[in-house]
Image 1: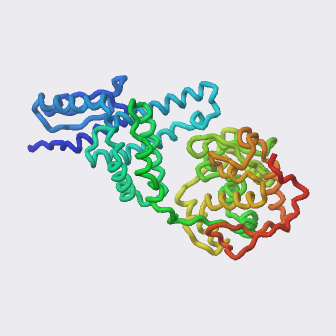
Image 2: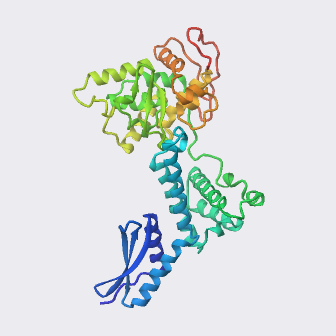
Image 3: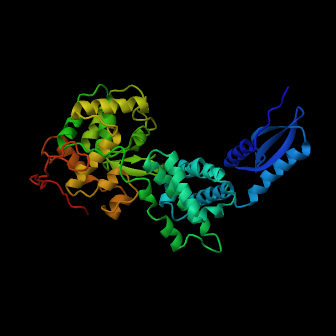
Length: 418
């Protein structure tokens, strides 16, 4: 029977995968007369194996040695592993030190894993395609430009390609800072400047903004069940993302302070969000109507399904607005809710969206998350129909002919940011 031999490309792909699993050693072992490569971690845990299809011991050992040597060199995969280890060490140090409130300390493990997956899924295949065995080659201008071309060919969504490129440059900047001779000088940056625009500036899915009339309809819509109602109201009013919504638990609600703790926010961070009285009343009715699932550690709602819920978003929003778009989901609700707040100078728009850079809010409101009274008052008054805000303006607005109005009386609430 003819034996199947592993090609050089298959062996290198396998070894890249093993190193992503923290492999530190590789051995050639004989199994039923055929040699195989087996990879192990530092604590001697087996990562995986691949058949060489070879009977020659010396040839099999030569392959194992050639792979093991690459661990100590500046190979892309080895340097990426060092970079990930650096991020993990920095995060652990921040969590145990005085910088416990820093963004890196608040980042969960999957945030660092995202960086790792981007580098392994895009940078390493490019290096393999271009036969780049030394990370120093990535500091050549023609190589960086070739990487830009590679991302543009393989990534259809321009925003995704920009994120991957930004992660790559951050990684290269970290490596360059550890070298005696820095390569990312002014000339290097000049050569690759404008790389963001290289992927295109126009969005394939333009942002849409709901009008105030649409928002009022959403707030009082006759939903089929409480979970679907929460899917619309909480992103719109509290600025919570879909992924954040499905992880909310009863213990995350703080009625005394009028906010909720979003424990699993974007990027693994933690933040707080407003919780108006009418949302509190809605959730209180939900809790009182149940016989189970009301303990502090229980989720607010269960039974989420991303694909099905996306269809629900689009169906109901199309019924309300008469428009159909791929942007009709929780982000459309969050963005519209943020826009209506910003329109009346509440200054909490960025905070509602949960963005990491909040330039229009006070230090107290961003760090402590206690400065939600005025925005809670706004939403409660709007829900109860005490005033009618002007239509929302913005790119992709569903009411482009609407003109802003300043005829609303806010004298009964405090609209100044402290």
